[in-house]
Length: 437
Image (cartoon, rainbow, N blue to C red):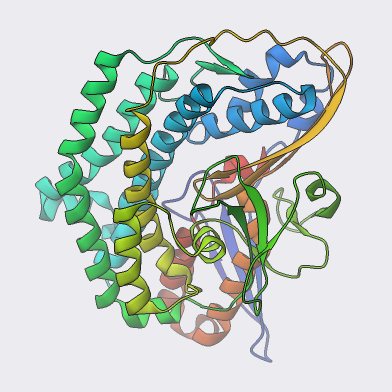
């Protein structure tokens, strides 16, 4: 038996390692290892609802708003709170901004060096090397990331752990003057966004062999299915089987009964999935395959070009980078539309304690995030269960890594194996803090 150890895995959110054991039969045993204290569900027991959002926000800085809103959705459903359409629009504006910012980091900082320098020394395969070759390109790419950060800060109050939103309410609205300024900045970034999309498509075409090597096994896909395309929240969960022609809708009420968790023998990240489903994938590939389109003109126009080049449904994991670019365009279009909405009214909602139970699901940047909440009559948390994107993706990630390892023939080509395995991991863009919480 031969062994390959990658410690640490670089250019991901958080700390993790990988161990691959190659048996004489050619079968690869993969162990994705990540550790952390999974005590959040116990910490919040007995906490009042008013303290729930600040606690769950600390699960992850880069996804903090998604955890806050997932908890808010669960509280609203459990207590039967009405949420105005204006408040939902304001909240979605902030979510799309963090979505845009998060994808910019995953794509430009984590993934792009793999595609630009696939054969270079790993020590040179990073954003600093790109900066040394072309300083202006890096400045422009990070300018897109800053654009999302700016919108997020103005709408949510802060870029990390923002506290503008609460269940069924918000602390403040965004003034018309600020909205006009944000619209001007977003509109001015359109040429750069289009140029970046062309760059990503070009680089992927030049790396077609690498894209095909990194795995393309079909799996089941879980995502929210909107009426006209991709949505972050407010849509129905849907499951698309590996051979199914159309996704099957799931009700939010039945979802908790179908969810399953299982301990990993080598990690603090627990496997999550659905009853009767062997391998499940969430994230950019799942959202596209379930919805078939984004539902905004520019993103759908770009999507047609991608389908013509790579086919549909999309199974190749490295194409997740291209889909993140398309989701950034979709997020840009959604932000442009939401910023032109009417002022928010009745933002200070009163939350009266009551007993209740509910599940909520939204689309975080790297996939489905599910909260299951039970509340007592006094407004105290009796139970909280969190299912993160990495938990849903873990089995598929390890299977992809096993297939790539077996195809490469173990450690005889150790350098190439290590490079390609890390590229596959970064294509999934795992968020370790969310996974171990």
